[in-house]
Amino acid sequence: MSATADPRLQRLLGGPELAAVRQRLRRRFEQVEPDVSLESVRLDKLDPDAHRALCQLSGRPSRLSRSMTLDIADLDIRLRAAGLADSLRDALERLEGPIVPHARLRREHEARWRVVADAAGPMLRAWLTSSPAAVGLLKRLSRDPERGAGLLAAADAVLARLPAAGMPRSQLAAETLGDAHALDASRPVASLVLAAWRHGEHRAGDERAGDELSAEADPAQLDESPATGQEAAAERLREVWARVGVSVSELARPALFLNLPMPVGGRYAWIAGEPDYLSLRQLLRQPPTWPVAGCRVHVCENPDIVAIAADRLGASCAPLVCTDGMPAAAQRILLDQLAAAGARLCYHGDYDWPGIGIGNFVMRTWRASPWRFGAFEYRAAVGQAPSRSRDLGTARIEALWDAELTAAMEEHGLVLAEEAVVGQLLDDLRQDAGG
Image (cartoon, rainbow, N blue to C red; front, side, top):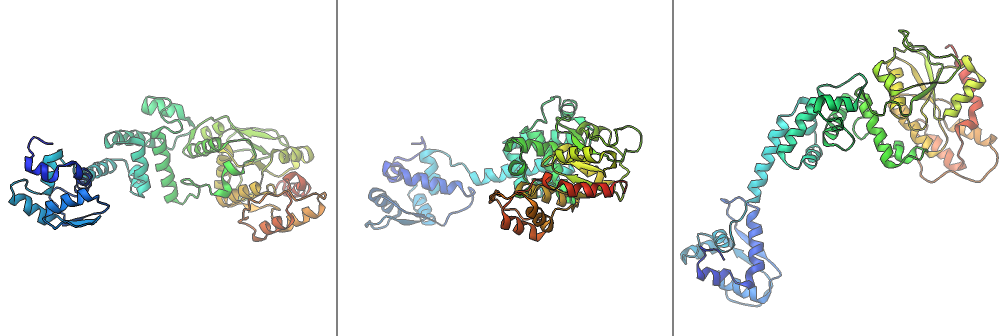
């Protein structure tokens, strides 16, 4: 009981039989501003003692009931006339302390968040105003507006240095934020930087922006390597960093190719007819100037195709790039560069659901055309394949480039590896050499 509560008020409203009712009323008052009057409050599931006490408080005749609608204005008048309190709200505060105005506090809290968002740089501000989810992410990462302001300032400092030219992520973090690990995966500043940058890409029309990979192109589901979902997510983040010129694990999974035209400038050299690699480090730090405008560049899924082409055709093989399953950062940057230089990419992969998903991603992202990768070629290859039982799984994926391919694969139910049709691929590579 509060020291200012009248004993009569305690007997009338402060008894144990009304303890639960007082808490319900307090919660109701917490949701409105202190100067806003409640007209009525509906109370249900009352026990008999509470109902009788409320009848006495409101001047109603006592009767058996489990519910009651309290007329708040009438109660305010009764309490003032009796000299017990200025209002029902005042009576509750006299009995059990101040009622916290949660509605006002929420409004003030949201106003502080708006000030924080308005002070951010243009890229972050555009992202924060794009959807409630953006502000929600900022709140989850920072918990309070003061920490949020600090994170946004740090993210702005990083964004001001992007795009970079092959700078390691740890160097960018150390030079900009004083902590070499401040931009590691799952660190809050890194999350804000990548979210804002991907939003900017999305606004610019880049189809890979945001969490761009659809179910059929998710490396966690489609890549046949033993990568876990966590590893696949890390690879996707590595590729986003690469798109802004920041290298992460820059020597991992280099891009395999055969007979790409030698870049202009003399910085690169490889042996004609021999497979070679370009690391993410090389592609970002010294982006090659590719003389491929109008040139057809074949793209395959499996490294063995490159090895077979080198063995069979050598220097007489058309330019060939391997995605090595779902393309990782180095492969994606290489394909970005070739497409930007005017190359006409054409793609072939495995005839299984992961292969179809990878094909969808490659053709959608780089506007590649199918390379002997359709229903007609599948049916022809099935006719020449050794007889065996169905081995195609049930996780059906639509081939975006050929409406009949998925139906044909379901009809025959056979997985055909890229190597099974390598003879036809070699014919094309031989004919297109020097084109």
